[in-house]
Amino acid sequence: MTKKEKFKTFVTNRPELVDYIKNKEHTWQDFYEIYDIYGEDESVWKKYSEGNIDRADPIIELTSLVKGINIDNVQKYINNAQKAINVIQELTTKKPGSKVPTMPPKTPRPLTKFFGD
Image (cartoon, rainbow, N blue to C red; front, side):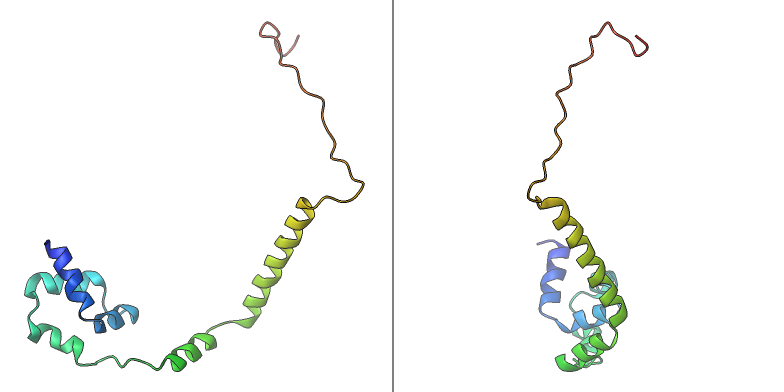
């Protein structure tokens, strides 16, 4: 088992590390470097598993997410999407009685003929 695979196994057993990644306090590279130097030494990893980051209630997370949404921008995106859908529908639906103009087939230009001929 390679060191990288051992690190992946180690991280799956320590889900609290993901909170540090989500809060952008550390990167996976940071944790891998610590793992590379100290291994699975409990004294090193103890500070990350003591619960320095509280797991937030999902309702609180959802509320904070909704607070960050700009309703005006959402409405603009919805309107733009609706306009695009309408244009596509107009282009793809056939109107009764309308004929698609057909062009006569083109004959290939002879190889001996040039543009000015």
